[in-house]
Length: 427
Image (cartoon, rainbow, N blue to C red; front, side, top):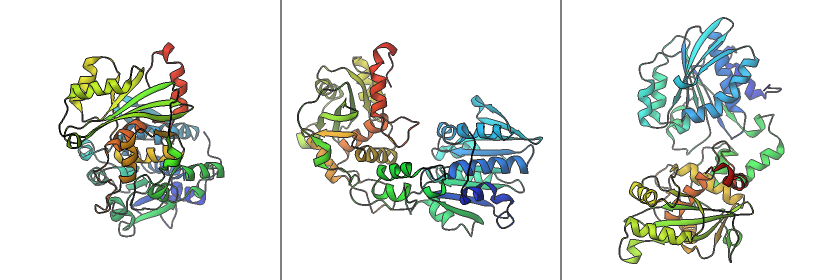
């Protein structure tokens, strides 16, 4: 990979540390729209700065998880560094990279800052610099622990992120206080990425709506408010009658006191259809059900169809074990990242890749009632009328490919299914 052209902001992001006007800053913060070119230019600048300024030093390169860090930063960057004459020796099992350039060798440790416990991983190190990819997704304790490790003279801090809620700690402590922190702040838009065509820009504009449009397309730190899925349209997304499907999946949000909601999904013509649902509320029905009774309802929902997998609320350990014990359906634990899931459902609805049968009255009801909690000042839906919404989110998140973060891959799933009998794989 060769970079043929950089925008003015990308050039500044790469070279600020050696520019007389900016080189005395202790940190750089880049935020803004998705696909705006900030990650590549910033990571390139970080490694060039570190390799040119130090010898025999240690650095931290941080993402929400090491897997996402490798995918978003390391994998696309290393071939580019090698083209520029860097010798990169990666120790995958030990999560570090030794990089030599112009006779200087430095070590870059990879860290995942996914939760409060992650801070302990980096504690006690001495660093000459740190790079944060998606800083807004990391807990404050992890970020501040990493910053405290930067005690080498000349060390600098590099922050890259997409916007979040304006109540977010990073926005208030770093972006709004950039001058106080002696940090250079650069805001990116899609127009700052010369490799992005107008066609692709328009595609991303179609993918999002509401707060997600303002954040990921306009690059604003905007609060979520109102209905979570304003793009849901019964005339567009609700259908009647029977359809022929080529693959079936069931998603489950399990509850004892709270309702249980199961959805039967079928793939037809590249679109996933919610064909039937099971929704049981102990309050509404006047009594609770056991795991075995819920499992019997699961089998009835499947109706003799070949079910590729059952995606279950990860906290429902006893029900997951019940399904496994019966041995009829493959079962997987759902990804319960709420905001990521909501964003992915929003994208699938905007692309018309989800349809709901009119018989699924509870999910249609919840679409009308599922709202953001405006009182918290943070991204969080109200924990009411959310059980079918949760099983929907589990389904969509599971059917997203990890390497296609914003695009629902019904067609890819369909292609994999057509060869499933010979490969015996379950994606």
